[in-house]
Image (cartoon, rainbow, N blue to C red; front, side, top):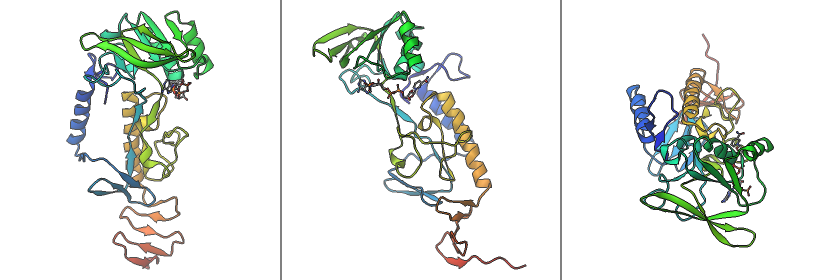
Length: 312
Ligand code: NDP
């Protein structure tokens, strides 16, 4: 979690720090017997159940899998953007207006929002509740945002657009945080400085789904597709929750809500085994595979036996 202060999670009237909230989540899950493995998953195989997850030195077999790998905000990659002490990330630079906009550091200040899509329009509009002025800095002279979001931003007197401008650097000092952005006019190449006290990068998000590419149904951006009112994916037994399947709400509370849905979906799935896999095989809770023609059973140890009805 890159958010320091979480002000909008229910139950914490005075707000809570992101890492502390996560520690509480963990302790609560441990109380109910959850075992935690802190490993990077390097590869997955979702063709057959049990599913196989590979880490550097372990192979993990799973009857069901809940994907909750989240999404990462895209960054510009310019000087001054990195997290403190290498830049002003957390000291005036953010990628989440909903999380950080209400913080005292941004109140009545001049803020820059970078981007021209719906996220940028939404963040700029939201920030006008707190800021004295919001500049939307966009690299072209046309927005990508939907018409309705554009119009809302155009009508807002606190928002000013800076067109054809590429951010070259975020300026500031360790003591005061952000003091401005150095921009380059895309038409004539001229550099100029825009004074501000905060910068919100709103150039989109990237779901963390590279690991699952080619194995699970995703939209064109890479968000995992789930099935309407449930968190089921196209693979029976694989569920997805949180920002990895949600490009719209992206809040800690909505992620936690879909996490709860996934847990219930996975539990119900296990209660209703055997299930049919995309290959047409059936897999039982004991890990036995019943072949597509229903003629053979392959046990979890690899033994092949005929699928004959049990005679009373
Ligand atoms: P988009 O990809 O739609 O827009 C990203 C914006 O950032 C574009 O204007 C793009 O510029 C700009 N950009 C990208 N990379 C850079 C860069 N390196 N330097 C400078 N500018 C850059 O992402 P969004 O997050 O805005 O939206 C994603 C999806 O979520 C969309 O489908 C959107 O409709 C949806 N959404 C809906 C909302 C709502 O309805 N309330 C709210 C938020 C998102 P350029 O235009 O030149 O490519």
